[in-house]
Image (cartoon, rainbow, N blue to C red; front, top):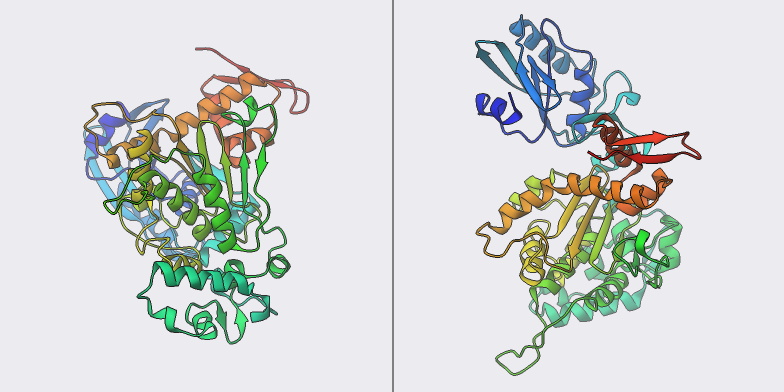
Length: 480
């Protein structure tokens, strides 16, 4: 049977991700890798008693369903094999072909989740369980402190580390765009305390990043920088030069916001219209979408990551790259107004000047604003330790006359991301058969681990071969 036919027979499960295993009489050894990967990535169902051959599924059944359920549940509840307690949801089904047992493994808030030792930490890439890299494990530990890490005190800091011009410019901006706010009446010292920029005459990491002097920030974040590059092509591979413009370094996040947004907003058309008062209109939905993306990047970045936030402006799209994974699966965040900022103080500072909303991650504003301008939706790539958002400048995804809602089309856009990534990898290999893993990672925005997983899948499907050694060899694309 097909996947759809299997899902029709097991129709009370919501399949975000799933893994089937035969398990006729005992738990398969690979089941613990899948438990780890689902716990660390986005949750998912493990279904025992089903065999998969390519894209076909066959119910084979389990012989001792009660014993398998007990063994699995006891192992997770005992907290001896795994480093954290895992409480699965359990479903049992009885078919003519045999019994089927399903376990839902939820996304853990205590990542990394591993069995026996930390080396057995796995993450989910597509339909594969992949051993996590050291960088990915480090990112998970930082995510344990999601929303609190930058609220910690920066050791050895003081108000002298603040760029006071930035503070005064911010307060002037707040006074003009949020006049009724009570914070406007506070002294500078009280304002800094009230917003948690300072605590007991020391700076929080957030306060330092947002308002600090560049030299002071670099003492704690030696490679602090937010990049903006303009590339004369649709990708690096069709650009004759690396870039034609690179944003100069700025003092802090507040100064970076204005420098970034000024340059980004120059790259899209702003139709000339008049307000009812006779002034030139400045509010355009597509500009607001880009503003939202800029602020989101600055609010939700993992500033402790070795990767850095980056905007790349190509001839056909604008791309925002943000280090740090999302706190919940992308589809869940898109379907709710959940607000879980990674950097709470930074988020609050943007909200006080009305540059960010109080709810959610701004997906609705980005989707609706951009689709009204280009008839396309932003393209999202959410991985364990980064998020990429691309705004295409030409109509591409929404057909004329379509009666689909923006939300429905967004769902399809997210599901097509993997397919587009594979096409991009194959295109780059066709243009340069000797292209390296690092070059593929840079061109696509995927981590090296993501590139390796896609290449493994292409090889298994017979679409790709590696001819020769890693050094000096080349890629051969097999035509269907």
